[in-house]
Length: 121
Length: 106
Image 1 (tube, each protein chain N blue to C red):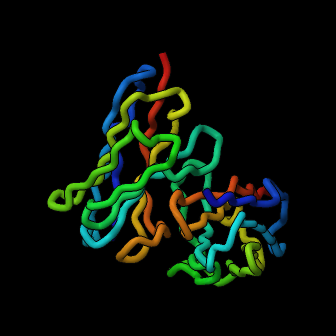
Image 2 (cartoon, chains in turn green, blue):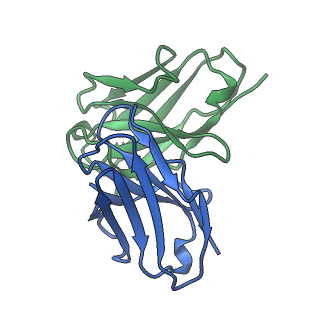
C-alpha cells in the first residue's frame, strides 16, 4: 500500500527557514516524479514545486522561486522541501504528491496527509 | 502561465441530483486536465485524468468530458459521500495550475 508521510511543519517567524520531509513507502520511489502542493487556510490548491525521477530537474512556482529548494534522496525514499525567506503568505498545509505514471506527467494519484507551516511573528 | 477558471464556485444539491462543474483553460490543454475531490480536512483525491479517464477505484458516476478549452466534471447521481470541494488542474505545462474549486453542499 502506498504511503506518503510529511513532517517538519512548524510555526516560524517571517524570514525564517524550515525543511519539510516526505517519507514514502509502497512504491518504487525512484520511478516517479514528485511534487509539493500547498493550501492556505480556507483557500484552494497551489502547486509549489516538482522534481523529476532522478532529481536531475526541478521546477518551481514563481511565488517560491529563489526561496524554496526541492530535492530527493532515492536511497532513502524521501522527498524534501527546503524553505528559506519565509513570508506570511507561505502559511499553508503542504502536501507531497506522487505522479500517477512513471515519467513527468503532473497527475497526482497519491497524496500525504499534509504538514502545517505557519509564518508569523 | 495557464489560467484555469472553474464555475460555479459553489452549488447546493440533493442526493440523486445530476451535478455539473465546468473548468475553462486559458489555452489549449491537449486533454491534460485532471479533476480532484477534497473532503474537509483531507488530502485531495484524483478522480479523473486526461480529461475523461476514470482513476482506478473511482465510481463510474464521475464523468469527465472536454470541448476545446472547456472541461466538465459530471456527477450523474450525487451520493452523500460526494459532498466535497472539486478542483480541476492542468498538467499541460509548468507551472501546473488548479482551478479555484467548486464546493458542493447540501
